[in-house]
Image (cartoon, rainbow, N blue to C red):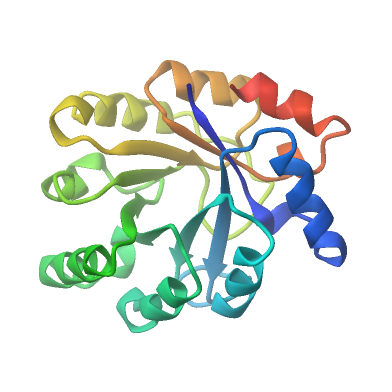
Length: 214
């Protein structure tokens, strides 16, 4: 069954503990934690200190998505803040050696590692890393802001990645514009993890929203 990862970026931070408890009680699988630096993307979110606080109020899997420049410089701070998985962007790296160094560094710290691609980046760009990562994150919107519409061409990327899963053993995660319709589209084409923010946290019935994704 597909895993559901509500994006804490859409939670109400005046009652964050209550919001986290609400998704725990309706069987969310992961918490998706978006880190944005105002440089790699045109938005700023939150850093490692809030992640550390979050780790104290939940036992859910902490799925950390680094939308930042120079992730190798900051990654240890997110590891120390109890990230379960750290995903970095292919486009934030300068070359193959840097990518392999970062993957090895995260693995050596006993944290799972993922690589993400923007809507304009082809799957071909990351094929050489599929043996070494635990997850590939397909961005189905331009990274940086919530509430965008799903980019339909993302389905082709999911389908393409799904052809490699039996040989490379990674999960396919999809983030951006996920709702009951687009979630089913992603799931039917091979997605393993669905990230949803406003669709879940703004829903009148959050349990129903999650159940429709599963």
